[in-house]
Each structure stands twice: as structure tokens, then as C-alpha cells.
Image (cartoon, rainbow, N blue to C red; front, side):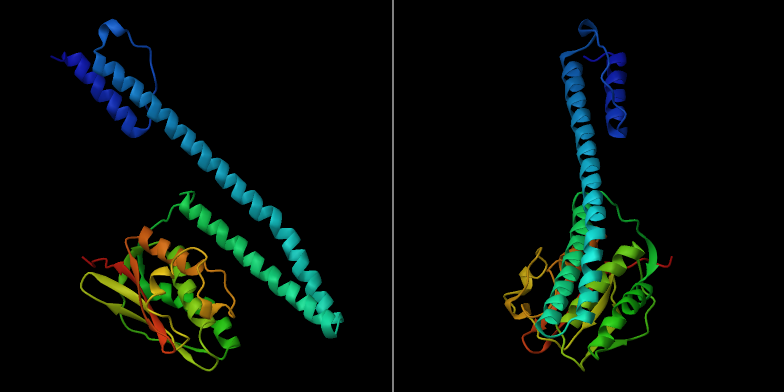
Length: 280
């Protein structure tokens, strides 16, 4: 039967482990039960493993930051000089310069997406959810997407209305919604429109993005949110197949989810849901 001092020691060992402050100490085996000794070894091993995991995450973060930093300057120079070359050249040389510039921009977008994806997957950055208006999120994403929509003569129709609130990270939720709107712009024809609205239900509210683009076959919908997945129908459009993956990850990290309704040739509707925050 445990003595009271042994119980206190076990209790303290567990409390220290839970708080992340457990340290191996010198124990006198004659004063400890076998259970206490085994628990001490287990907690010591767990503490070492956790420390190694933290160190690995820090190394990954440093590597990602270095890659991002080291590639930024040469990519910027490639884009600048290819643009200058395109302005001075003509004929085939001009076409080659424009293609170099286009592919450089694509590489820059890919590196940026990979950095975000890696930081999210490894837990390097953590979302900071607060009570925010979904309309604020939608308006910010709308403002970011508007210039690109205008280039294709696409009208973004923003419906005012509900002031639904959710416990979300404003910056990264805006990024998720922008990715969905940007995707709709990519696969919509010139002169069409995209409807943006918020729908409120009993437990959830959603930001809805409805386009009149190429649409998606039912068999492809489950694949849409995989990393780097691109439909055969989308092969002629720009994109790297990361935007929707990031959008779903960001939604799920905050207790949300995404639904898709679509049909080939009839457009798509993406709905990103978040739990409602009560006003009470």
C-alpha cells in the first residue's frame, strides 16, 4: 500500500510532466517503489522526446525561412531582367522573355505557398482565433481579389446582410477565403460574375462563393483539396494546386469545413463554414 509521501511524489511527477517542467532527479531506489521508478524513466524519456521534437521544429522553421530568403533576391532579379528584355526585344525573343517572366512568377507563387503549407503542417505558426465578423473577412478577401477579377472583366457581386460572427484568425481566414475566390476567377470565363455572400444557420454560418466557370465533375470533387491536385480541365489555366488545400486546412484548424456543389459547364459553389459565436 502506498505511503502518503509516495503518493505526493507520484502526483508531483505527473503535474510537472503535464506542465512541461519535469526533470530527472536522483532517486534512492530503496525509498521508491518499482512503479515510481518506472514512471520516472517513462517521464524522462517523454521529456527528452518532446525536447527533440521542439528542436526539430525550430530547425525546420529556420530552414524554411532561409530557403524563402535566399530565393527571393534571385527570383526578383530574373523577373526584373526578363521584363526589361521583353520591353527591348521583339519577335520570338520577346515571347521567350515573357515566358521566362511568367514562369518566374509561377515559381515565386509556388515557393510562397510551400512556405505557408510547411509552417501550417509542422505547427510552426499557430492561428490566433478571436471573435470576428465573417463580413469583415469576406470584404477583405473581396478587396484582394478585385484587381485580378477586373483584368478578366469578371464582376464580383458582394451581397450585404448578415453580421454573423465566428471565432477565427482574421488574417489567415481571409487568406483561405481569398484562395477560394481566386480559384473561382481562374476558372471563370471573361465577362461572367461571381456571387459572394454569407448564409447563416442555427449552429454554423458560411461564406459562399458561386461562379459560372468550367465546373467540376462529381468524381473529381473529393480530390480537389489534395496537395498539388489539378484537374485535366484546368491544365490551360494558371495555378499550382495548393490554394484549396490551404483553405481547407485553415478552415479545419478552426473547427470549420468546406462544401462544394458543382457540375461541368455549369459553374461551382464553394461554401466555407464556421461555428457561430453567440452574442450572449
